[in-house]
Image 1 (cartoon, rainbow, N blue to C red):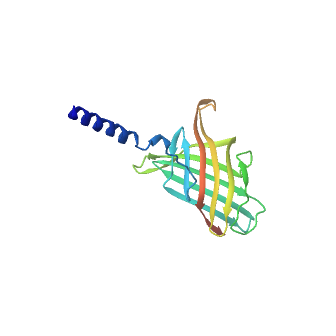
Image 2: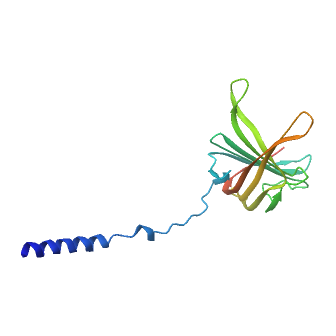
Image 3: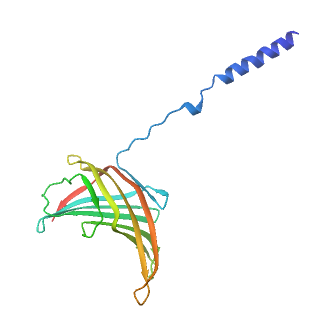
Length: 190
């Protein structure tokens, strides 16, 4: 009887200890924008470039200011630029949403790395954003620390024509949910 009672006590103690474990489903995580983080989805797959370059360049002869972003990872490259006329010569950039339109003020392109005819590898244009098919939004800029935050998205379209100028095929790649978070930039004048 003592052995049975001792065995039941041992089992009861094991059940109590087991029920005291922390429930892993109660853990809450919060995602925040980490400094310098840039990412987007390319055709539904997360792309987080490991090579980034962002510049703001002021051209004193034309009084234009151009923001250029280049991100590269895993043989994929995204480049976009926003040009402003009648700009001031300082390291700021106006907050706002800039859309690809009929003017050349916003350009957005998607490249992939391919083997070239000479045997080397290089980035080859896959597609560009057509009018009304892309936006860049600048939501914050810190001119003291030279960082920029914003979003971007576009459809990179390639149209193939035959010898008569007729469309043979159209290929579209979706670059969506792009984000720049406190991304460092350089400022130059020429």
